[in-house]
Length: 246
Length: 246
DNA sequence: AAGTGGTCTAGACCACTCT
DNA sequence: GAGTGGTCTAGACCACTTG
Image 1: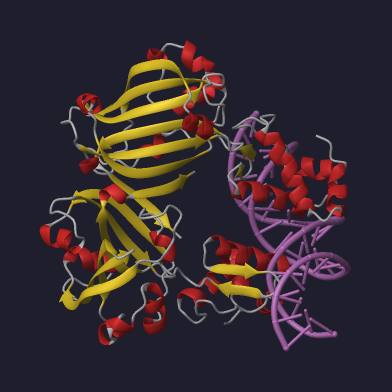
Image 2: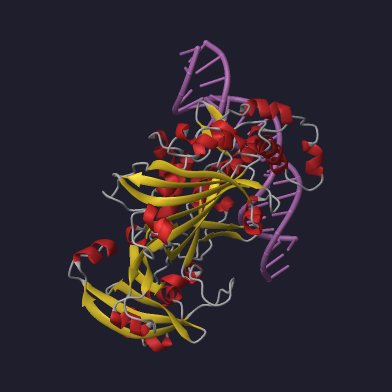
């Protein structure tokens, strides 16, 4: 990391703390500072950039507010470790209220196919590029509750094509991190209602055309690239979703 | 506002900026500093509390991050003005995509009734207390799209019981602010799936038992008290809702 | 004890908004 | 030009975590 241009960036009208934040952001999004790792101490950065403590702290505070960094008092500042996925499925209501058991995964299919234009646009790859497609159901209390279709860029996730699905855990995001070095940092979900096709209904042990909730998710890495597209269906009558709005 | 205790609070182990923030929070949540009003300048507060600029700024930053204050460079710091409600209904998809027209309101009923135990618990009043109940539909492109049931504490919202509904605008939150001095600061929504009763279906010009999305909202004022309970129903096939997760 | 982030000071100067 | 919030400095000291 070369600090020499920080002051010249400042001359160009940019704030010093913003210039420093941009440099740190580069270290993070490029992966040179990997998820979960500690970044240099504030006093180290202060000397490296030749600025006052307050300026370094302002830069770090900015990245903390963006969710890229986490401060831990007395220990250091760390690159945000990413989502496990467990917190993203708290929305379906099955069995006991307040029960946050992770549903068991049952992989039905893992195939390679080519991206449609729409999927390619979402994943930021070219139409016709290879993608991995996963079909799985997720079980709670011995019953299939959710049906998930997942698409991944085959190039980036080659380890997911080569490894044995039986060795995967119930949560896929830790697998992405461990096997492919891809950390999911945020996600965007769209909720709609529909009805189940006959094959999907059979997998969920529901009648064909049964009403279902459809949750379409795009998961993004720390650099803001979409890395996974996932469509989840479940019984509409067992669906509830809570959101806080400001 | 008496600043004399700030340093003594500090002695008690609390941080100075936290003690100051607590004082400012009191001015806001009590209504002494009303929504939309400017608070004293940083230099004024600095002198009043006898602390350095950085400490005042840290206190204000805390309240900004809580959504209680808004900074405007060169103009001042203001108490958050509250939600209009327009941003809360961007989620139903009707007509053209990206169209954010505000649906026209049609009041069907405004009655006084008594709170059930559940409603009273939500509104923070005693069971059996008087509440105002409003039934209205909301129209877009000449069609009824949403059916809303709204409950308000009759004591706090007496102006909504006395005024002529024909004089209300399509958005109720500005009416609450203007007529009752109640500002909606945040809201919590739960989404579920259901089917329409015959009377509700008739008002929405849909067949009885038609699938519907049910959005149940609690709206909170700046002090965190629930001031409105609202249940909205609309055609499930026209529903979509997008959320960002971190 | 050493190292980390957190708080606080006192003061200078910059950038934006309004009159 | 006057008043507001925004940036930056140089340094002191506090609170938390780990070896």
